[in-house]
Picture (spheres, rainbow, N blue to C red):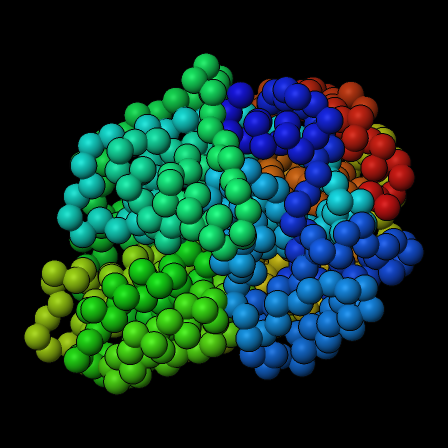
Length: 600
């Protein structure tokens, strides 16, 4: 078996599992953040559900660690009160990013299983543990039962050979991988990385690479554990650990061989993390702001790298540099090593530990027209604000902050460029959409919205600035208002419409709202060639019909056509011309949840 198959088998009733098996797995660590946590509490209360094991259950407040947003403050308090009543541990706003805390505190260890409402929970692959982001319904079930159902994924093996070039950092490695594999060629796979240089990677470097597995569409990226990783985890957890490795005869759906000597410093162009290019293609692009942090690059090694470049220098005039350590322990270590003074002396804003700009709950946002170079993991349109975001390593971000434009650490000029301000555009808000009732037959007919795009992510579907909304009736008006060309979707959509898209629909965040927002508009179903792994679960659990098709070429589909979809057979008919194609019928699990009107 592969690494993921061994871990899942060891947490199920089966000694052996294989790809596409749907199994119940025991979850060692069940966590909810301040984003998603209140909905978890609501599900538990509404369904009169208790907590299976409070010692394995946690809340982590990392998306708004300042508590500066009124709705977030209310939601955090809801979780605190619930936790006090049930003996659940809360890692509060002074702690930092929850997934990192699980490693730091020895709560997650190699071979263990964890689920959280964080779509980057798969960073636990860095220590050889299974971590998975899930929606609030799944997490509520995990809190209550200690188990969730899971589909065993296919595995992919990537061998990275050759020596690591100079000035190629961990972020550059993962951006090279994104350049090679894109956002959906590894969609739904468990990925294992091998090679001599891979074995040398530190924990911090492994976390950087594992974190961006989500942006590649992968379920998780695993690194075989080393003695150093085992020693670290044993020290933190106080437990003896038997690491899990893939069998010599493990079966992989794909095997790729890459040459690390061909890797170069990279940067992701605004809008898509996988639109990664040689950094020279973006050299000297003027920036307004720079950000160092996030679950991808706010570790101690990242901050030391930045401090070495920034020491004794000043940030370019007109450029704002924001630095956010990943956890409070790292923040304290920065203080002890003098890094905080270096950051403040160079003109940076240093915030308390947390997710920062990625979650729209802390420093790191930008405005319309603003150009930011960031160490974050996502630069979807609107993810860190209304500006443009380039993704790069901490070394590149620090060097660029000093130069005033995108550059590398070996090309920092003696004098920075002078900033010139431009007028910012402001996007108008859209009017609210009346709620419509949605019927749930097994055969449906409706007019289609044909949106022939890949990788429509959850920020395009339901932007993170609306995450505090928990009332279903308020969600519909914001559907697709961050998807270029479809900002008026909510105004034009009619009850009974069906949305048809291409690959990897719902990539990105674990937010349930990206599913629920279609309901008040009366949208009957989504048809796609493939879905983001978390989105697929959220839709099935919410009994919202999603159908996977293999091809639409045979039915000559155009926008505005009327189609008929049979959930029991998978048959799709274009009623304009009578042409038929077949998609995947509802699985037994999907149909059962659908007929039950939800996972509860």
